[in-house]
Image 1 (spheres, rainbow, N blue to C red):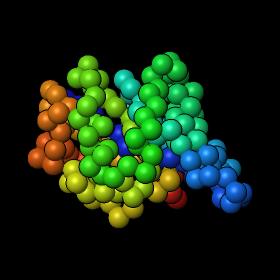
Image 2: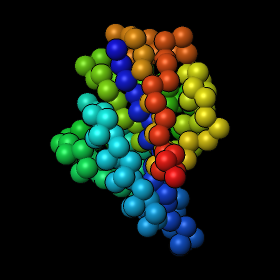
Image 3: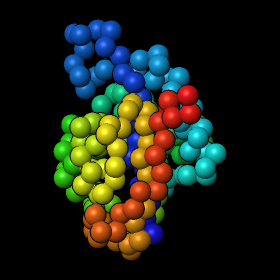
Length: 163
């Protein structure tokens, strides 16, 4: 069985409109929300074999928080430029190209691609908020087999879920 956790990057800052989108850092709220969300993953004992992240600064900062909170090796993180503003189909291609040695994969990226991928795999959510998590399981041996017929919603979590 393969497990996927889509993690939308934490809330990013819009304080300086001169910064290119790719270089926008996390906002103060992102620095607060993501450690809480990472702690929830740790409490559920959801630990990735690999974290595949967009190269955008807000995504890599999100990944580093997760690595710290889950006490993972830095080598767990793989940066993928193609995930920045990727479509649902491009993200699915990235998932399908993963090593079959990987059983639990965290994917850190962006909307609207994540919302599209969730729908493409049969999940149901209007909008995955910043710092939100959407988990799928798939009873497959190879990532190449991943599709709507074998992906099942595992769990959904986001910062305001328990407010």
